[in-house]
Length: 251
Image (cartoon, rainbow, N blue to C red; front, side, top):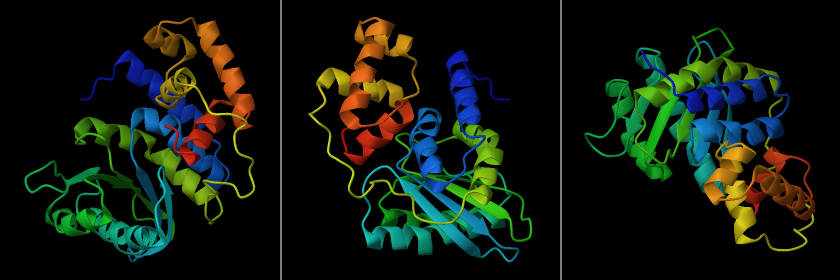
């Protein structure tokens, strides 16, 4: 049995509430880079729709940093499908894979056989889970590049979030999320170190009060900083500010 801390409960509830009405890939991307990052930080999220035979029919890669075309082809064409098949061949429970021999691994021999492909992708670990094999509507999700060795606690988080990931992928139309919108104007000025620190706290899912406590300033001062940041970045809320900073590689 996994007992969640008060902060984890808050992050989980916030992630669920904000993920219930995702309608397109852009929203899914912002959700993955905002609330989901606070609970399960990762570098890339593979979202796959799988048919009754276990073949991947749709693959969407949502990633924080820039990936070249070759890396995306590898993730969508080789790494993702192999991990999806390995997960289906196991117990259909959340599975963990690490690049190091003897590292964190839970999911059986089929998943262990994917280790060379995980190494080729440039990520050190993966957390995999999906839905039951419904005909034409099954999904598998892979979190890649967690900043720690994932374990049972993180697998439990992914299990709780699976229904929302599953429904979101089936709901949103296929396409490529525009992590950088063509023609968008550059920020009117560079962000200060204090503003970047505040946004880093926001990205981690902290409230204004929590960010203020960490930086030794009031929640009102945090709010005022954020309002100025919104104007500089040309955005309207916290999630869009974080996404814009990720586009600009400021965080």
